[in-house]
Length: 178
Image 1 (cartoon, rainbow, N blue to C red):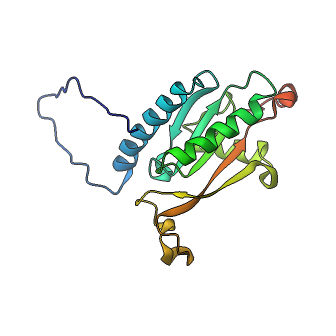
Image 2: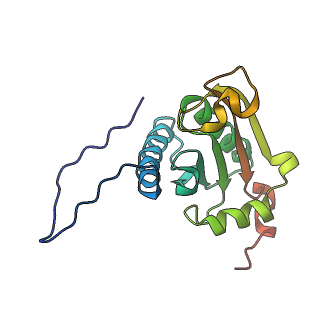
């Protein structure tokens, strides 16, 4: 199920310069990210999870789709597993989604600095990286090609969820210093 972006109006100013977007580059990554964010938000809403997930950020550093941050708002202990399970389902449903990082509400999902801080201080990678089996990938991901890893699974790639959130039961003990 692809999300469609419908343009309702286009405006311009006198003397404007038209720049094409022909990628690859930051412009292409931002456009891909916008579509990725809309698609994921729509899926989360369809599943009734819009209150559990606050914001979706498909960062340009991941090409706009290979590195996506989901900001979560846990309200109960059971939410620790609910957010991981929901993120894993998204990985299986969205071929362009590859790496999902879960962050708390006090982390700006659009700030790579904040996201890396959360990964460094709130994730125990031996416990918090959840690797999925081979799933369909996107042709824009060069690591899925057999030449990259010697795999016969052309078009398939391992995807992962990294939980960079504080466990709900410990959230009062984790106060951000900056």
